[in-house]
Amino acid sequence: MIARKNLAEREGIPLEKVTLLRMEAVEWGDTSLGCPEPGKFYAQVITPGYRIILSDGMEEYEYHSDRQNRVIFAKEVK
Image (cartoon, rainbow, N blue to C red; front, top):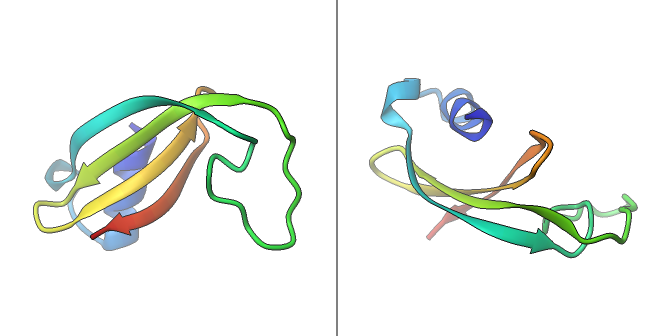
């Protein structure tokens, strides 16, 4: 899974320590996948994808994706 690999690289932890806690289907309101960046424009189309929650055993992290292998780090879950 792309999100697991990204988190392992981002946090400098072994891939095998990153676990999937949950994944839910979502319809994002545009192509920003719920993570718009200031100054960027996004196609205003419903974009099917997933909200992915991962853990490194200590913290939880949220990723957003579409169904075309595009994955974005959204935030550390508190």
